[in-house]
Image (cartoon, rainbow, N blue to C red; front, side, top):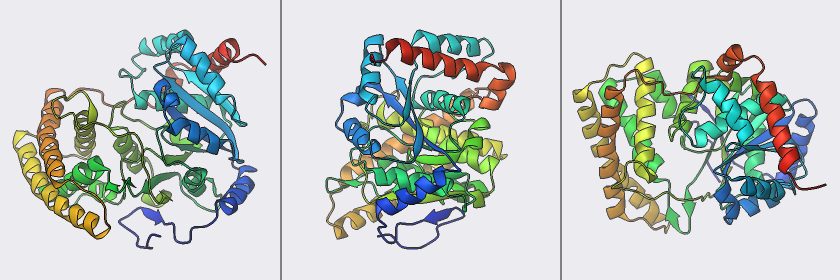
Length: 409
């Protein structure tokens, strides 16, 4: 059970009473009569073969208030796409699977590339972007939730609490971020959020002084959570990164586009576990190393839009400040783990901090080397301006894929 403390400038909705899921779902079914709801699931084909995804499907089969489930499928051959359609066919909701690697959606991608409007990098951000476009095309949802497909501890209460703030017509929230304690198997997890994002934001405050944007980011209890929900109109103007900076990029866009009283965060799980990334200390193109570089670049880019000027000396100061703050946090997390009987490897924690400190400098160098780089995917409003019929085409091609490759009736 959490406390009722309001942290920062974003409203926090706590789990104070362990309210029965059936009560929440009953209310959501009432909301759905006037404010329809859908779920976006960005998915790799390989995730269908894990222990997490079958459990997620079993829980989603019992969800009564969703009008549509949109699944973005990456890294799938034709045979695997057929298998995925069969896998998801057990869902009772209207379910559509976007075969992102299929010839029909690739053809749309080529059309967008002709005007440099297609995401250039593969990955979760690109997957989410196309799913948002499809959701706009069908127009079947006023409120939309999104979560990852590798959540080992998933239950349908997570989804109910996640979508409730934007589904309740008596609330005025346009966007809601999920948060939770990253505890599983007797261990304290969530290294990138604990050891990179929070101390990096605190170090940026030291270097640049008070900035409303940094206060805003610091208000989120778990900024890297892949679970969030939003009203339909949010998707039209959203510009997001295609790399690991997706979550921070989404938060930054919401800050640019909406007043903070239209944003909130909600406690969606007592404990949460998903697929863990390797540290990849010797490989900047994978694991937590790439993740830390992408996230840091996303923060630097957003700060630049707020008028902050960077140079090599600035990044050295940020690194030095970060390193001292992060090491202090290692001690704090160790003590927190001890009092709760959890495991925490202090040596590995400090090695992780050392890696992240080096990657702050690498992210800074990349930023200075590519000042004209277009880091964000275009918003769908711009895409529709260039290609007014693109959403109709997207919807039609998905339907054709589903009809051609889906299981026989």
